[in-house]
Amino acid sequence: MAVQVYGVDQTYVQSFLPQVAVDDDAPLTSTRLTQIISAAAAEFNGLARRAGIDPATDIAADTTTDLYANAQRLVFELARPWILSAAHGTIVVAAEVEVIRQRALDTMLAFAARPQALGEVPATATPRFRSSTHALGLDTTEYHRANRRQFDGARGRTSDPDDIYRN
Image (tube, rainbow, N blue to C red; front, side, top):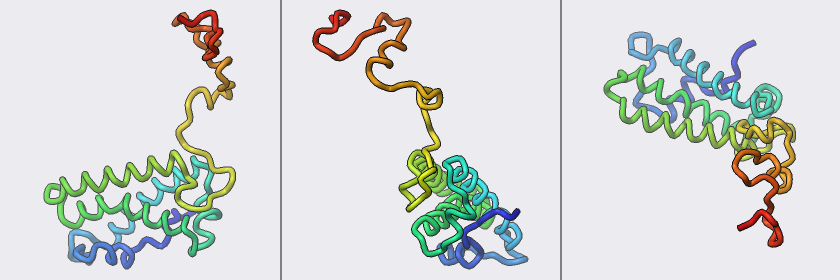
C-alpha cells in the first residue's frame, strides 16, 4: 500500500519554495523529492493512526475538508527542512532548517495532543499523549487520587475543610 501524501508533490512544493530547483542535474532530483515527501507523509500518517484517524478513509477521502488541507500543510512542513537541505546543502541552511524543523515538530506535538484542532476527525480520535492514570483506567476523583498516594504521608487527604489530615 502506498503512503498517502495528500497531494504534496513537486508542484505543491515549488509553489511554496520557488527558489528550490528540482531537476535531473540539480542537487535535488524529482526522485529524491518524492522520497522526502513520502518519508514526511509516513511520519504524519503514523501519528494520525496513533490518534485513531485513518489517513485513507478519514483524511484523504475528501480533498475539500480542513482536515485534508491541514494534513497537506503538515506533510509539507515536515518535508521542508529536508527539501532545503537536499537542495542547498545542509551547512548552508542549517540555522533556517533547525527553526523550520522545530516549528514542524511543535505543530505535530500540538496535533498529537489535540487531533480535533486540524478539523473534523472521527469520534474515535484520541490524544496521543496520555498519562499512566488514563492508560491504567484509574479513577481520577479526588478521593481516589488521594488514596493512591501511599508514600508521602498524604494518603487519604482531601480538600475538605474538616479533613483530619490537613495541617
